[in-house]
Image (cartoon, rainbow, N blue to C red; front, side, top):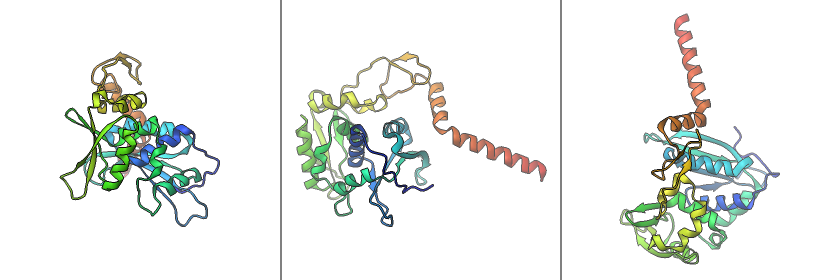
Length: 260
């Protein structure tokens, strides 16, 4: 499969641009093909298998920009990841040049382009729950960059502290104070998908329809499906090609053994 495929005719919508910006600030990255004759970049985002629904949501929103979505081994660590790749497009190159001015991801004035959707994607990527506190993992950025992110979040109504991460020298993360009354969470709440609502400070136990069978259910906001049966059906639908290929290989192996 050709990953660096020119797609000049594919233009990002404002919604897609926000998803890209939030993803790049969070768990995703942009890369370029230095040997290509045209100026373009592609997006890659990688989520743990427990967040497969979130990865698929991103892929669905990115539409025709997506090259492929697949489940891969997590480098031998035992779990699997859900990976989304886009095509390499000129529209992503402009964002790449802003985010990687010297070849390294950096926090600069481009973060001010994030709106409520972009902020929500960033929080769904890097936000975490620690008791009653809400953290955003910014350990990849310097203290100065964390200060810029703090300033940006304060502009959206958040009270933020920069915390020192004791797990490593020179690592920092952001803590949003008084999350239950923070205007920031009110801004991003409309864009938080059900499977990631557990990260919110006031995860409301709303009735919602199961995307597989349509049954209305309530309970743990992290549950996207009403039952294990529907969860398995959704997993099969996402990975049916892999299951079919596995079954085909098993049949071929059995046939070869019978003919041996």
